[in-house]
Image 1 (cartoon, helix red, strand yellow):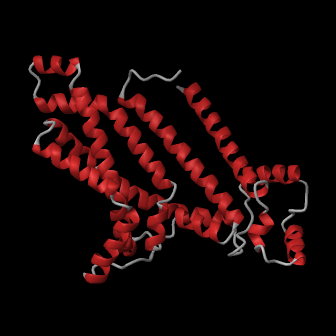
Image 2 (cartoon, rainbow, N blue to C red):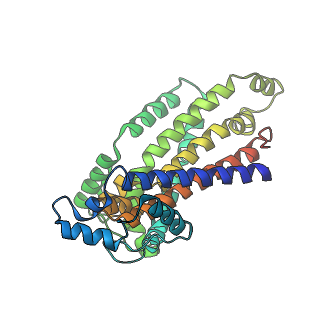
Image 3 (cartoon, one colour):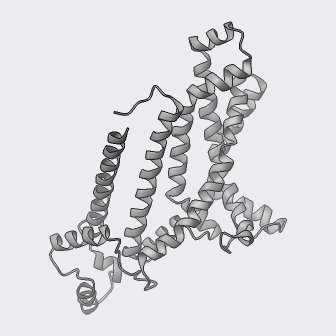
Length: 309
């Protein structure tokens, strides 16, 4: 296990480095970063001044080496728009995205018991209702759902604020409800579908018939045997959902003005704030790699037959 973890961490490190190389390529080779910073209508004097200020008049290979050197030391420079440290901006936004993701992820686990109820009697009334509802909530665009929640809950009923942020303390919970409700239905639907599908597949296997022949209660068969063997697929999907949330629920954060990583990245791209873009992409990549690694560790805990060498 230890050797496997070392290899996985090493592979993740090289993948992140390759991703950052692609980012450097996109910024410096596929386009002119000076054009991104000053616009196409800037005078030649302004262009030359920007090149001199940010060292963009140096050879490409020198800038590439400096890019990696600064990145490995956590130095991304100052935000071009706000004139504060880009790393500090990203670290300040990361907890906001993490808390919103955790709340949506927690409520999204309600899809697991719904999928279990549907799998108990395939093609029964509960199964049909859960199946239809799960497909329905997955099909709802998040931007439309967010706008409808604002219109009904905030504007017409005046129960919650339309948008904003007042920290992650007790006073800020009311600003988190609508963004979380916007994200949660899709997660509930996907969890319900994967739980139902994998449990129905497992229930058709021989070991389930053997357990029932031994006189085990149906609940014991479902929870102690079927769910345990179906858990790997469920955990895989949940890890994928959590990684997607840590990427930044971009549309939701923009609609509700939630100051998370997704909104920060979009704002940085719009304002051509390259240091913030670089820092945001790196933090998101590390978060996704960490979540995938944690999911791999859960595999061995859920199923002893899974062994990493």
